Image 1: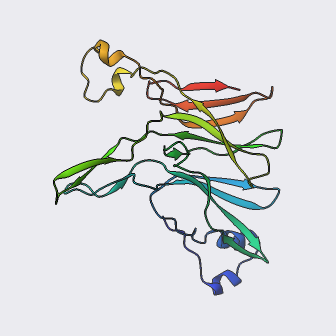
Image 2 (image 1 turned 120 degrees about the vertical axis):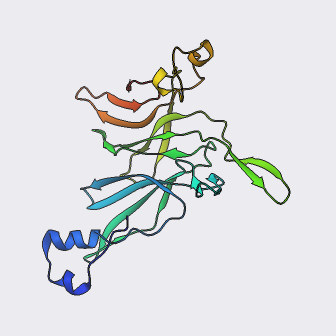
Image 3 (image 1 turned 90 degrees about the horizontal axis):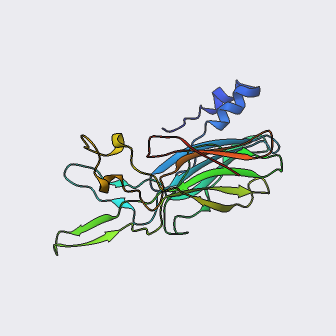
Length: 234
């Protein structure tokens, strides 16, 4: 949804927090492609508000058909836009790329917020989501080829910054061999066959969130396709 800003006359009648909110409601600069998983983070030390998200890119757009519109696969580049105040004016800056889909040739997605550690580091949890390849059909030549191909498995990690968002690096590729829970098998009725019970080479750890515990350890929790919530400690 677009964020609307009030007129200048109305803004002049406001003051304090209301005026600041009015400026913050200005529309974020447009970004091409589908956008996924917006996450806000307030850096109180610098009075900056950051909006993290993923932006679809490359050849991972499914063409329109008679029954369905064109659609992007989930994920893409991880980006951020920053709301800053210059001489009393609040403005969203341009989008900056933190981690590209081209790195590892697999789309990246986020869903949960930044964790600020006692060390001063920030962690932004993300996951790499392997897409289903897209079959592109040329109706004039009646030929087809495949797009959005990734050989990398779905895995989870974090982006780390040690300088309050100036630079970021990716670490971690967590996955696990998960068998499909019977309720997750599309169209399944009755007991699973041995083939259906066979576990895949990599797990489906997504929508991860991270927090620092009182003893200093890090706890990350995940949604999975197995019917259970998973956790990992560092």
